Each structure stands twice: as C-alpha cells, then as structure tokens.
Amino acid sequence: MDSVVVPKPFRWDSSFEVFYKSLDEQHRGLFDALAAVAENLGDDAVLKTLVDLTTAHFSYEEGKMQDAKYENYPEHKKKHDGFLADLAGSKKPNTTDNCNWAMKWLCHHIKTVDFVYKGKLKAEK
Image (tube, rainbow, N blue to C red; front, side, top):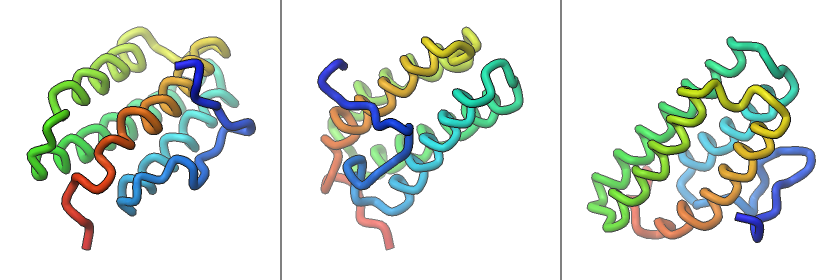
C-alpha cells in the first residue's frame, strides 16, 4: 500500500477517475466524507455518514460488477467487506492514525483494485 500517494489535502482528483460518472462521483463523496471525519474526530454522526456512504457505494459498485459478470467480483467484494467491517465494527476511523489508515486504504483500493475494472463494466447512459 505504500506505493500509492495520499493527496494532501485529502481531496479526490482526476488521478482517481475510473471513467464511470456515478462511481467517480461516489468516490469523490467518500473522499469528502473521510476528510470530514478527520476534521471531526469523535463525532459519531460524521462517522455514521461515512459508513452509510461507504455501504451504499460498495453496494452500487458490486451491483455494476455483477451486472457485467466481472470476473474479479468475489475478490473485490471481500476487500469491501473487510474495510467496511473495520470502519463500522471497530468505530474506525476515530483517531488520526485510523483516519490516515482509511485514507491510504481508499486511495490504494481505487488505484490498484478499482482500476482493474476500467472498461469492463457496462457503460452508463
């Protein structure tokens, strides 16, 4: 995970584009929500917003993978499930270290896991 650069300030930029408009918009929203958590450590409502957005995004993205019969779907879903369990189950990220971990995970996941599905999902209309 060390090879992926986490932008500072933590904002989505075009280097994270997967070229599916709705997925790029959702990724942008995850960046914004995670940045809000980092700015409001200990605020359960802000953390809940991040968990809810992450859950909705993963569900949508996984649906697109299933619709396209994406061959890496099972492996991709396991990564989502693990991150979401950490995020929701153990109240992560609630410290600066945990926020940094989540930011690094998100950047790494998009650039090394999500990028694999570029051009393999059904085009959006």
